[in-house]
Length: 113
Image (cartoon, helix red, strand yellow):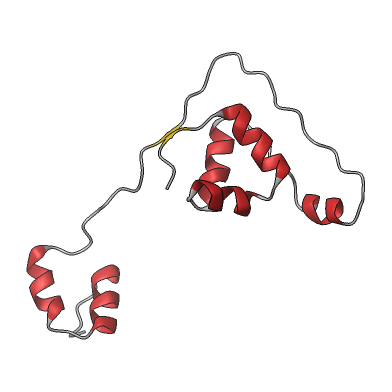
């Protein structure tokens, strides 16, 4: 998984060389994470149909990387671990089967309702 500072020029080159989904796999993050980093860094993304048009030999325009007035730094620190269930609920949850415990834990509902 990618952790660190996104390089604006490198990200621009990658998202225009391959679809965002492939770039995301390379970084080990979701395509949404790559798209968010691009928005924050003001990196233009290919529009809908860009890769289909390119694959069929149509002329496609590549949007230039705009100049910035000041440097933008976007850093990915890694996944944040947030406890979903309290220790009190965990004791009760372990007595249930895995399907019930997952739905109860993540949706905040009691299995008795």
